[in-house]
Length: 195
Image (cartoon, rainbow, N blue to C red; front, side):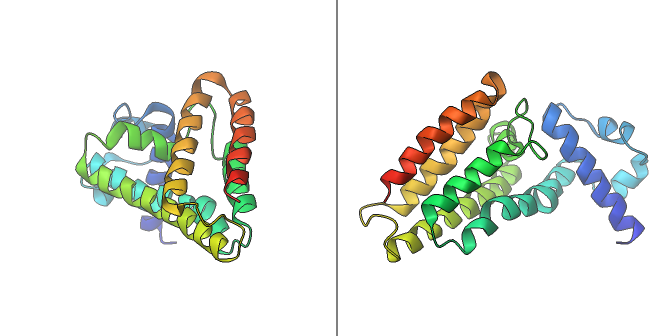
């Protein structure tokens, strides 16, 4: 990676870390710059403003991570109930990329920025649609191979699964990881009811 591209990526990574903890609106360009060895000129060479940097963060950091954790595990699924459960369980048990105190970076940005900024709204909505679409496709495949009941509406189930994940991430901020265990028990019961 060229030095310029590495600098841009480093700005996005540091921004992602700070925004995850402090929120987008509470994180200033100066906060980002003071946490790393990059000049204001370098920041503005890569991004014309904070909004452009935030949208690049969604496209270049958040979306690839989401694809890796949420889409790819479902693409080759032969057992949707097991694979969807494992995807959510892995997300909730991941302490490397997620901190229970701060919830989910994507959910946080959706709550904070989606109502305030149409560009953020569009980019974040695209991520949610891609994720729900992957779950829906996985469930449809399960219907075709007899692992999901014929009466199940895959689109509705996918929306319910994504909404449940967002909710439990927020509850975890207040109640800690123990609430994840209770959620996962009930989530497994829900998924088994789709058979």
